[in-house]
Image 1 (cartoon, rainbow, N blue to C red):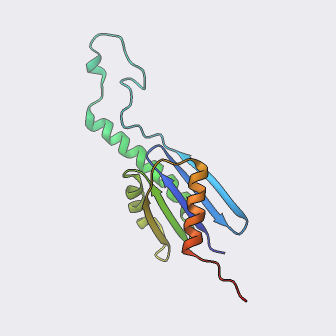
Image 2: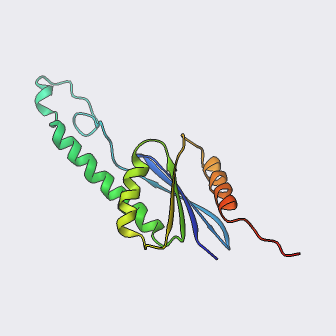
Image 3: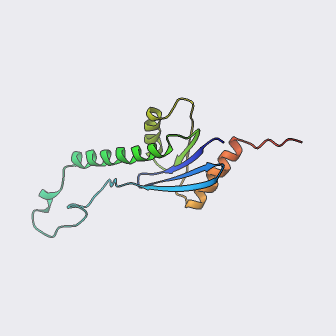
Length: 142
């Protein structure tokens, strides 16, 4: 049977729903990326000259980009062997992930991209089931 994977992603978490002949499996990957971290490792300082302790914006952006790249590598490693892949979610994370997938996935893999709002785990699983049900209709013989 084909390995169908649905993937809801944003910059904080990825919810992966794997459909196979044995059933449905859900896996969550959390990101360590934080676009606006606290001044000193998440803690606010009460000392004077606090502005001198704040990292420059370019340093913060480079750290954020590196953390996202590591996060995307982890997601790609999990979905690499899919036959069909549905990527959906809010924001720009899905587009960034698709660029990473284009480098890592085999050429025969079907990748669909959709925009979706925030969803619960059950809504994500239902959306994946419905998508692959419509994409691959069951043929019944009479």
